[in-house]
Image (cartoon, rainbow, N blue to C red; front, side, top):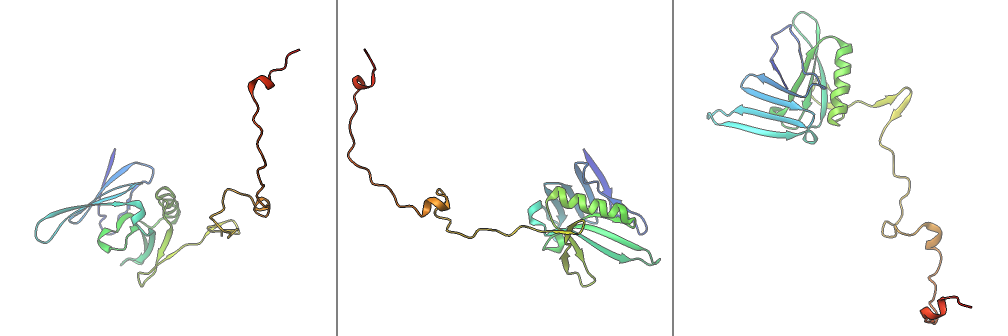
Length: 180
């Protein structure tokens, strides 16, 4: 199911629902198809040649939020999938309701497995630190830094010496059967 949307006129909002499947978005001469696996960007080059690029989710830097003040003095927040190439950045949301913005920002980040980013006035994106209450949530450090070549033996067995095999006696089947 496709959700069609166009670039919002000044003062209106745009919202692509993260839980709704594939979205189709037209912005100027570009057409975006967005889902949780990535995006497909179609655009016309200046020479008139159509170009289609499939961008997987892991190619994006993260889900970036940027607050901009419009002519009326209202704060408009834009959410976008941030790519290294500005031509491949995909808009997800234009709104001014902070509760909806935060919910969508977190949802897109979690579904696409991308970090949440904030874009400053200079355009530089910084990652938001994730917290769970008062606890900072980060990737855990590796606890043990040992030799990785010996993974099959525990520590206490690595200290022991190997045993020596003595003479081997052959046992026949006749000796194993117990008869009276």
